[in-house]
Image (cartoon, rainbow, N blue to C red; front, side, top):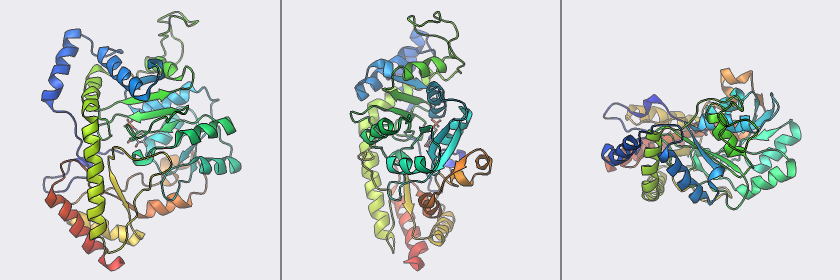
Length: 388
Ligand SMILES: Cc1ncc(COP(=O)(O)O)c(C=O)c1O
Protein backbone atom coordinates (compact mmCIF):
# COMPACT_ATOMS: atom_id res chain seq x y z
CA UNK A 1 0.00 0.00 0.00
CA UNK A 2 2.90 2.27 -0.40
CA UNK A 3 4.29 4.03 -3.37
CA UNK A 4 7.10 6.41 -4.18
CA UNK A 5 4.41 8.88 -5.33
CA UNK A 6 3.32 9.86 -1.80
CA UNK A 7 5.39 13.08 -2.06
CA UNK A 8 3.82 15.12 -4.85
CA UNK A 9 4.98 18.47 -6.24
CA UNK A 10 4.34 21.29 -3.81
CA UNK A 11 0.94 22.61 -4.84
CA UNK A 12 -0.64 19.16 -4.92
CA UNK A 13 -2.72 17.84 -2.05
CA UNK A 14 -0.78 14.71 -1.07
CA UNK A 15 -2.47 11.39 -0.52
CA UNK A 16 -0.54 10.50 2.63
CA UNK A 17 2.07 12.23 4.75
CA UNK A 18 3.77 9.91 7.27
CA UNK A 19 3.87 11.27 10.83
CA UNK A 20 7.27 9.99 11.92
CA UNK A 21 9.05 11.25 15.07
CA UNK A 22 11.27 14.30 14.68
CA UNK A 23 15.08 13.99 14.63
CA UNK A 24 15.11 15.77 18.02
CA UNK A 25 12.83 13.13 19.53
CA UNK A 26 15.00 10.41 18.05
CA UNK A 27 18.33 11.74 19.30
CA UNK A 28 18.19 10.44 22.92
CA UNK A 29 17.36 6.98 21.60
CA UNK A 30 20.25 7.09 19.12
CA UNK A 31 22.54 8.10 21.96
CA UNK A 32 21.30 5.18 24.05
CA UNK A 33 21.85 2.82 21.16
CA UNK A 34 25.29 4.15 20.51
CA UNK A 35 26.28 3.91 24.20
CA UNK A 36 25.21 0.25 24.19
CA UNK A 37 27.09 -0.35 20.90
CA UNK A 38 24.19 -2.55 19.91
CA UNK A 39 22.64 -1.86 16.51
CA UNK A 40 20.87 -5.09 15.64
CA UNK A 41 20.58 -8.80 16.66
CA UNK A 42 17.75 -8.52 19.17
CA UNK A 43 19.32 -5.59 21.03
CA UNK A 44 17.97 -3.78 24.10
CA UNK A 45 15.60 -1.50 22.13
CA UNK A 46 14.06 -4.39 20.20
CA UNK A 47 13.61 -6.21 23.50
CA UNK A 48 12.01 -3.12 25.06
CA UNK A 49 9.63 -2.77 22.12
CA UNK A 50 8.71 -6.47 22.26
CA UNK A 51 8.09 -6.21 26.03
CA UNK A 52 5.76 -3.27 25.44
CA UNK A 53 3.89 -5.24 22.76
CA UNK A 54 3.63 -8.32 25.02
CA UNK A 55 2.24 -6.12 27.79
CA UNK A 56 -0.25 -4.50 25.38
CA UNK A 57 -1.52 -7.88 24.23
CA UNK A 58 -1.32 -9.30 27.79
CA UNK A 59 0.73 -12.22 26.54
CA UNK A 60 4.02 -13.80 27.63
CA UNK A 61 7.01 -12.24 25.85
CA UNK A 62 7.60 -15.54 23.99
CA UNK A 63 4.34 -15.05 22.08
CA UNK A 64 5.47 -11.87 20.29
CA UNK A 65 8.39 -11.24 17.99
CA UNK A 66 9.45 -8.38 15.76
CA UNK A 67 10.63 -8.70 12.16
CA UNK A 68 11.93 -6.33 9.49
CA UNK A 69 8.54 -5.96 7.80
CA UNK A 70 5.12 -7.58 7.63
CA UNK A 71 5.79 -9.18 4.24
CA UNK A 72 8.63 -11.27 5.66
CA UNK A 73 6.58 -11.75 8.81
CA UNK A 74 3.77 -13.35 6.79
CA UNK A 75 6.24 -15.47 4.86
CA UNK A 76 7.93 -16.76 8.02
CA UNK A 77 4.65 -17.43 9.82
CA UNK A 78 3.54 -19.52 6.84
CA UNK A 79 6.87 -21.34 6.87
CA UNK A 80 6.59 -21.92 10.63
CA UNK A 81 3.15 -23.52 10.21
CA UNK A 82 4.93 -26.40 8.40
CA UNK A 83 2.18 -26.87 5.82
CA UNK A 84 3.03 -29.33 3.04
CA UNK A 85 4.50 -27.57 -0.05
CA UNK A 86 1.80 -26.46 -2.47
CA UNK A 87 -0.81 -25.99 0.28
CA UNK A 88 -3.78 -23.87 -0.71
CA UNK A 89 -4.08 -20.70 1.32
CA UNK A 90 -7.32 -18.73 1.14
CA UNK A 91 -6.71 -14.97 0.82
CA UNK A 92 -9.07 -12.15 -0.15
CA UNK A 93 -8.88 -11.08 -3.80
CA UNK A 94 -9.09 -7.51 -2.46
CA UNK A 95 -5.82 -6.88 -0.62
CA UNK A 96 -2.31 -5.55 -1.05
CA UNK A 97 -0.07 -7.74 -3.22
CA UNK A 98 2.16 -8.78 -0.28
CA UNK A 99 -0.59 -11.01 1.15
CA UNK A 100 -0.43 -13.18 -1.98
CA UNK A 101 3.29 -12.90 -2.71
CA UNK A 102 4.08 -14.07 0.84
CA UNK A 103 1.96 -17.20 0.23
CA UNK A 104 3.75 -17.86 -3.08
CA UNK A 105 7.21 -17.27 -1.65
CA UNK A 106 6.39 -19.69 1.18
CA UNK A 107 5.78 -22.31 -1.51
CA UNK A 108 1.98 -22.35 -1.43
CA UNK A 109 -0.92 -21.46 -3.71
CA UNK A 110 -3.17 -18.46 -2.99
CA UNK A 111 -6.87 -19.23 -3.41
CA UNK A 112 -8.57 -15.90 -4.06
CA UNK A 113 -11.82 -15.40 -2.15
CA UNK A 114 -14.50 -12.76 -2.12
CA UNK A 115 -14.95 -10.13 0.61
CA UNK A 116 -17.98 -8.92 2.53
CA UNK A 117 -19.85 -6.14 0.73
CA UNK A 118 -19.90 -3.89 3.83
CA UNK A 119 -16.71 -4.55 5.83
CA UNK A 120 -14.70 -5.30 2.64
CA UNK A 121 -13.12 -8.25 4.46
CA UNK A 122 -12.85 -12.01 4.07
CA UNK A 123 -15.11 -13.25 6.90
CA UNK A 124 -15.44 -16.71 8.52
CA UNK A 125 -18.74 -17.20 6.62
CA UNK A 126 -17.06 -16.46 3.28
CA UNK A 127 -14.19 -18.80 4.22
CA UNK A 128 -16.69 -21.58 5.07
CA UNK A 129 -18.42 -21.11 1.72
CA UNK A 130 -15.03 -21.19 -0.06
CA UNK A 131 -14.07 -24.43 1.73
CA UNK A 132 -17.26 -26.00 0.40
CA UNK A 133 -16.22 -25.41 -3.23
CA UNK A 134 -12.41 -25.58 -3.13
CA UNK A 135 -9.66 -27.35 -1.20
CA UNK A 136 -8.27 -24.99 1.42
CA UNK A 137 -5.40 -25.81 3.82
CA UNK A 138 -5.06 -22.49 5.66
CA UNK A 139 -6.75 -19.08 5.74
CA UNK A 140 -5.09 -15.66 5.60
CA UNK A 141 -7.77 -12.98 6.11
CA UNK A 142 -6.78 -9.32 5.92
CA UNK A 143 -7.76 -6.56 8.35
CA UNK A 144 -8.71 -4.39 5.38
CA UNK A 145 -7.45 -0.80 5.75
CA UNK A 146 -6.91 -1.55 9.47
CA UNK A 147 -10.47 -2.70 10.24
CA UNK A 148 -10.22 -5.39 12.94
CA UNK A 149 -11.54 -8.96 12.72
CA UNK A 150 -13.59 -10.61 15.45
CA UNK A 151 -11.02 -13.12 16.71
CA UNK A 152 -13.40 -15.36 18.67
CA UNK A 153 -15.20 -16.07 15.36
CA UNK A 154 -11.91 -17.04 13.69
CA UNK A 155 -10.96 -19.19 16.67
CA UNK A 156 -14.30 -20.99 16.25
CA UNK A 157 -13.54 -21.40 12.53
CA UNK A 158 -10.15 -22.96 13.36
CA UNK A 159 -11.82 -25.24 15.87
CA UNK A 160 -14.59 -26.34 13.46
CA UNK A 161 -12.41 -26.85 10.38
CA UNK A 162 -8.98 -27.68 11.81
CA UNK A 163 -7.47 -25.11 9.41
CA UNK A 164 -4.87 -22.64 10.70
CA UNK A 165 -5.83 -18.96 10.41
CA UNK A 166 -3.31 -16.12 10.27
CA UNK A 167 -4.60 -12.54 10.19
CA UNK A 168 -2.74 -10.13 7.92
CA UNK A 169 -3.32 -7.18 10.25
CA UNK A 170 -0.74 -5.01 8.46
CA UNK A 171 -2.58 -1.70 8.95
CA UNK A 172 -4.42 -2.63 12.14
CA UNK A 173 -2.03 -1.99 15.00
CA UNK A 174 -4.12 -0.63 17.88
CA UNK A 175 -7.39 -1.85 16.35
CA UNK A 176 -6.80 -5.59 16.05
CA UNK A 177 -6.61 -7.41 19.39
CA UNK A 178 -7.09 -11.05 20.27
CA UNK A 179 -10.14 -10.20 22.39
CA UNK A 180 -9.52 -13.16 24.66
CA UNK A 181 -9.29 -15.60 21.74
CA UNK A 182 -6.43 -17.71 20.45
CA UNK A 183 -4.93 -16.49 17.20
CA UNK A 184 -2.03 -15.29 15.08
CA UNK A 185 -1.67 -11.67 13.95
CA UNK A 186 0.91 -10.07 11.66
CA UNK A 187 1.26 -6.26 11.85
CA UNK A 188 3.25 -3.86 9.69
CA UNK A 189 5.20 -1.01 11.28
CA UNK A 190 5.83 0.63 7.91
CA UNK A 191 5.96 4.41 7.86
CA UNK A 192 2.43 4.65 6.41
CA UNK A 193 0.89 2.47 9.12
CA UNK A 194 -0.69 3.28 12.49
CA UNK A 195 2.50 2.55 14.48
CA UNK A 196 5.35 3.67 12.23
CA UNK A 197 8.89 2.42 12.76
CA UNK A 198 10.02 3.28 9.23
CA UNK A 199 10.04 -0.41 8.33
CA UNK A 200 9.09 -3.20 10.68
CA UNK A 201 6.70 -5.99 11.51
CA UNK A 202 5.24 -7.63 14.57
CA UNK A 203 4.02 -11.21 15.04
CA UNK A 204 1.63 -12.00 17.89
CA UNK A 205 0.62 -15.64 18.24
CA UNK A 206 -0.86 -17.86 20.92
CA UNK A 207 -0.15 -20.94 18.74
CA UNK A 208 2.39 -22.96 20.79
CA UNK A 209 5.95 -22.25 19.69
CA UNK A 210 5.00 -20.24 16.60
CA UNK A 211 6.45 -16.84 17.57
CA UNK A 212 9.67 -18.53 18.79
CA UNK A 213 9.99 -20.43 15.52
CA UNK A 214 9.47 -17.21 13.51
CA UNK A 215 12.14 -15.53 15.64
CA UNK A 216 14.54 -18.35 14.90
CA UNK A 217 13.72 -18.23 11.17
CA UNK A 218 14.21 -14.44 11.22
CA UNK A 219 17.75 -15.09 12.51
CA UNK A 220 18.78 -17.33 9.57
CA UNK A 221 17.22 -20.40 11.23
CA UNK A 222 19.93 -20.53 13.91
CA UNK A 223 18.77 -22.22 17.11
CA UNK A 224 18.26 -19.68 19.91
CA UNK A 225 16.80 -22.10 22.45
CA UNK A 226 19.17 -23.76 24.98
CA UNK A 227 16.52 -26.45 25.60
CA UNK A 228 16.21 -27.49 21.94
CA UNK A 229 17.52 -30.79 20.47
CA UNK A 230 19.90 -28.90 18.16
CA UNK A 231 22.87 -27.23 19.95
CA UNK A 232 22.62 -23.52 20.64
CA UNK A 233 23.96 -21.62 17.61
CA UNK A 234 23.53 -24.55 15.21
CA UNK A 235 21.30 -24.26 12.18
CA UNK A 236 17.85 -25.59 13.08
CA UNK A 237 16.01 -24.64 9.87
CA UNK A 238 16.30 -22.78 6.60
CA UNK A 239 15.61 -19.21 7.64
CA UNK A 240 16.51 -15.77 6.42
CA UNK A 241 17.62 -12.47 7.89
CA UNK A 242 14.46 -10.65 8.97
CA UNK A 243 15.60 -9.13 12.26
CA UNK A 244 14.43 -5.66 13.25
CA UNK A 245 17.31 -3.22 13.76
CA UNK A 246 17.75 -1.06 16.86
CA UNK A 247 17.23 2.06 14.70
CA UNK A 248 13.77 0.89 13.71
CA UNK A 249 12.95 -0.23 17.25
CA UNK A 250 13.85 3.28 18.48
CA UNK A 251 11.35 4.84 16.07
CA UNK A 252 8.78 2.23 17.04
CA UNK A 253 9.23 3.04 20.74
CA UNK A 254 8.74 6.76 20.16
CA UNK A 255 5.68 6.07 18.00
CA UNK A 256 4.32 3.92 20.79
CA UNK A 257 4.63 6.84 23.21
CA UNK A 258 2.67 9.04 20.78
CA UNK A 259 0.21 6.38 19.73
CA UNK A 260 -2.75 7.33 21.96
CA UNK A 261 -2.63 10.99 20.91
CA UNK A 262 -2.02 10.29 17.22
CA UNK A 263 -4.70 7.64 16.96
CA UNK A 264 -7.21 9.97 18.59
CA UNK A 265 -6.30 12.72 16.11
CA UNK A 266 -6.62 10.26 13.21
CA UNK A 267 -10.06 9.09 14.34
CA UNK A 268 -11.25 12.68 14.75
CA UNK A 269 -9.84 13.69 11.35
CA UNK A 270 -11.48 10.74 9.63
CA UNK A 271 -14.86 11.54 11.17
CA UNK A 272 -14.52 15.23 10.18
CA UNK A 273 -13.42 14.48 6.62
CA UNK A 274 -16.18 11.93 6.12
CA UNK A 275 -18.71 14.48 7.31
CA UNK A 276 -17.32 17.29 5.11
CA UNK A 277 -17.16 15.01 2.07
CA UNK A 278 -20.64 13.56 2.64
CA UNK A 279 -22.04 17.10 2.91
CA UNK A 280 -20.27 18.21 -0.24
CA UNK A 281 -21.31 15.15 -2.23
CA UNK A 282 -24.50 15.62 -4.25
CA UNK A 283 -25.41 11.93 -3.70
CA UNK A 284 -24.68 9.37 -1.00
CA UNK A 285 -21.17 7.93 -0.70
CA UNK A 286 -20.48 4.57 0.91
CA UNK A 287 -17.75 4.04 3.53
CA UNK A 288 -16.23 0.88 4.95
CA UNK A 289 -18.43 -0.51 7.74
CA UNK A 290 -17.09 -1.93 10.95
CA UNK A 291 -17.54 -5.73 11.24
CA UNK A 292 -17.93 -7.60 14.54
CA UNK A 293 -14.30 -6.95 15.49
CA UNK A 294 -14.82 -3.46 16.90
CA UNK A 295 -13.81 0.05 15.97
CA UNK A 296 -11.07 1.22 13.64
CA UNK A 297 -8.86 2.92 16.24
CA UNK A 298 -6.11 4.46 14.10
CA UNK A 299 -7.18 5.02 10.49
CA UNK A 300 -4.31 5.46 8.06
CA UNK A 301 -6.25 6.23 4.88
CA UNK A 302 -9.65 7.25 3.59
CA UNK A 303 -11.53 5.36 0.89
CA UNK A 304 -14.89 6.34 -0.53
CA UNK A 305 -17.10 4.13 -2.60
CA UNK A 306 -18.57 6.08 -5.53
CA UNK A 307 -22.03 5.46 -6.99
CA UNK A 308 -20.63 4.03 -10.23
CA UNK A 309 -17.44 3.33 -12.19
CA UNK A 310 -18.17 6.41 -14.33
CA UNK A 311 -18.51 8.58 -11.22
CA UNK A 312 -15.16 7.32 -9.95
CA UNK A 313 -13.49 8.05 -13.28
CA UNK A 314 -14.97 11.57 -13.28
CA UNK A 315 -13.76 12.21 -9.72
CA UNK A 316 -10.28 10.90 -10.49
CA UNK A 317 -10.04 13.17 -13.49
CA UNK A 318 -11.31 16.19 -11.57
CA UNK A 319 -8.89 15.52 -8.71
CA UNK A 320 -6.00 15.26 -11.14
CA UNK A 321 -6.99 18.60 -12.70
CA UNK A 322 -7.36 20.09 -9.19
CA UNK A 323 -3.92 18.74 -8.16
CA UNK A 324 -5.33 16.35 -5.60
CA UNK A 325 -3.72 12.93 -5.30
CA UNK A 326 -5.99 9.90 -5.26
CA UNK A 327 -5.26 6.18 -5.33
CA UNK A 328 -7.17 3.04 -6.23
CA UNK A 329 -6.05 1.17 -3.12
CA UNK A 330 -5.71 -2.64 -3.46
CA UNK A 331 -6.39 -2.46 -7.19
CA UNK A 332 -6.42 -4.16 -9.58
CA UNK A 333 -7.76 -7.15 -7.67
CA UNK A 334 -5.24 -9.96 -7.27
CA UNK A 335 -7.44 -11.92 -9.69
CA UNK A 336 -6.67 -9.39 -12.41
CA UNK A 337 -2.90 -9.15 -11.95
CA UNK A 338 -1.07 -10.73 -14.86
CA UNK A 339 1.83 -12.01 -12.76
CA UNK A 340 -0.48 -13.72 -10.28
CA UNK A 341 -3.11 -15.04 -12.68
CA UNK A 342 -1.24 -18.26 -13.46
CA UNK A 343 -0.19 -19.13 -9.94
CA UNK A 344 -3.40 -18.45 -7.99
CA UNK A 345 -6.77 -20.22 -7.89
CA UNK A 346 -9.57 -17.68 -8.32
CA UNK A 347 -13.03 -18.21 -6.83
CA UNK A 348 -16.13 -16.15 -7.60
CA UNK A 349 -15.60 -12.64 -6.22
CA UNK A 350 -18.65 -10.50 -7.07
CA UNK A 351 -18.32 -8.17 -4.06
CA UNK A 352 -14.61 -7.62 -4.62
CA UNK A 353 -15.24 -6.91 -8.33
CA UNK A 354 -17.92 -4.34 -7.48
CA UNK A 355 -15.63 -2.69 -4.92
CA UNK A 356 -12.74 -2.55 -7.36
CA UNK A 357 -14.91 -0.71 -9.86
CA UNK A 358 -16.00 2.05 -7.50
CA UNK A 359 -13.49 2.59 -4.68
CA UNK A 360 -11.20 5.60 -4.51
CA UNK A 361 -8.63 6.63 -1.89
CA UNK A 362 -8.70 10.34 -1.03
CA UNK A 363 -6.10 12.46 0.80
CA UNK A 364 -5.80 11.58 4.48
CA UNK A 365 -3.02 12.77 6.76
CA UNK A 366 -2.60 14.62 10.04
CA UNK A 367 -1.93 18.27 9.32
CA UNK A 368 -4.16 18.50 6.22
CA UNK A 369 -4.99 22.19 5.94
CA UNK A 370 -8.39 23.84 5.78
CA UNK A 371 -7.65 24.95 2.21
CA UNK A 372 -6.69 21.40 1.18
CA UNK A 373 -9.88 19.99 2.70
CA UNK A 374 -11.97 22.59 0.92
CA UNK A 375 -10.25 21.84 -2.35
CA UNK A 376 -11.14 18.14 -2.00
CA UNK A 377 -14.77 18.91 -1.11
CA UNK A 378 -15.32 21.47 -3.89
CA UNK A 379 -13.74 19.20 -6.48
CA UNK A 380 -15.90 16.30 -5.35
CA UNK A 381 -19.09 18.39 -5.41
CA UNK A 382 -18.45 19.54 -9.00
CA UNK A 383 -17.27 16.16 -10.30
CA UNK A 384 -20.22 14.24 -8.91
CA UNK A 385 -23.00 16.77 -9.65
CA UNK A 386 -24.12 14.98 -12.79
CA UNK A 387 -24.21 11.58 -11.04
CA UNK A 388 -26.60 12.65 -8.27
C1 LIG B 1 -2.61 -5.91 3.70
C2 LIG B 1 -1.11 -5.72 3.72
N1 LIG B 1 -0.33 -6.78 3.92
C3 LIG B 1 1.01 -6.67 3.95
C4 LIG B 1 1.63 -5.46 3.77
C5 LIG B 1 3.13 -5.38 3.77
O1 LIG B 1 3.64 -4.71 4.89
P1 LIG B 1 5.18 -4.30 4.94
O2 LIG B 1 5.33 -3.04 4.15
O3 LIG B 1 5.48 -4.10 6.39
O4 LIG B 1 5.96 -5.43 4.37
C6 LIG B 1 0.86 -4.32 3.55
C7 LIG B 1 1.52 -3.03 3.34
O5 LIG B 1 0.98 -2.06 2.95
C8 LIG B 1 -0.55 -4.46 3.52
O6 LIG B 1 -1.34 -3.41 3.30
